[in-house]
Image (cartoon, rainbow, N blue to C red; front, side, top):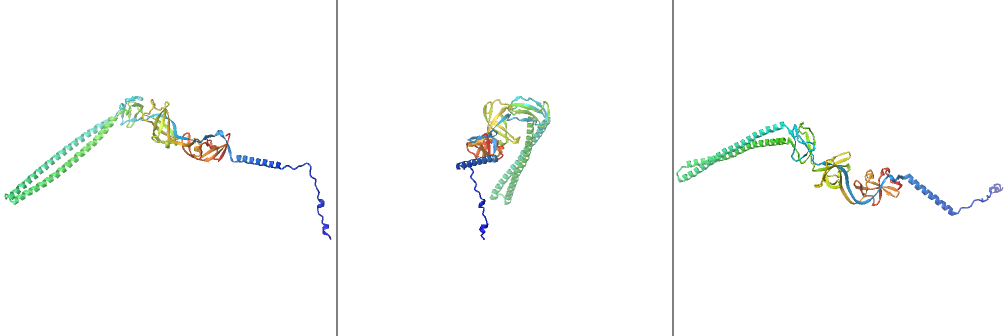
Length: 431
């Protein structure tokens, strides 16, 4: 049996379809143009997506941009100051008592002129007592000196008598020696003459020692009495000075300032009486920011402007205390540079030159310096601002030195960087 005849294939089911008449094959160039358009569209979508997804946009009108330049950086500060007197002491009461004023506030006074007199009976009475004690001690000292002279005189007499006795004994020995050698006297008599000489030697030595001791003892007593009198003299001199100071006198030519008491007031010791203002020497008091305080030192040069003219000055004092973020300093005019017609509390402009750095890169100072501590700047590149590390140096009120990280001619954002939120790159619209 033929098995192949029993199995049929599917050829009888196949049908041939006719080609449609309305469609034509596109040229190859058209296919290439379409592919290019699709690629450009994808690139545009990718770029726009990158801007919108990773870069923020900020209005350029809300920031300030400055250019990096090269030049001389002058570190200075300017401040408004007020004129004050360099010397305006207050006079105090040296002792308690009733005050008699000789002047009133505003009077012009001369050096040494009486300003007030304090009546202090207690102090004057004490002076009289101490002067009496001084007179007594001086008398005792004089008496001790006289006693010392008498003691020395008596000791000198004894010494002179011993010297005479010694001379007489020596002569006796010489006479007995010649007589003994001539056989006129015995050996016993000659020996007695020698004994007399030895006794005179001992008497002379004792007289000399007694004279020295008597002189030293009398001198010590007299010196002690004299020292007591000198000590009392110092006490009296101090009291006399205090009594003299009861009359308050002008320490220099000037003007009476504030009078602290009324006429006839009974004041206590060390109570303020009045002040005197020296109108010949003025200073200017200024207040500077705390950040510049460390650069201020006595002797730093300054300039003060008065009436359109500039006068040389220098820092004379710097307060160690910071008040409300400011430090008080005083400027003193150079010799012969004080402007005429100055008045107390008059307002003047001052400028202090702290340092000058020549031929350095610098840029306008702005909030960016304080925001990142001078370590970062946003450099403008076209319509973008790129974050870049920098190193800032010395700064003045208007400019800051650029040590590294920037080049001359580059532009950076000096104000408004607080909006960037530490982004690496930002877009500046309207730039």
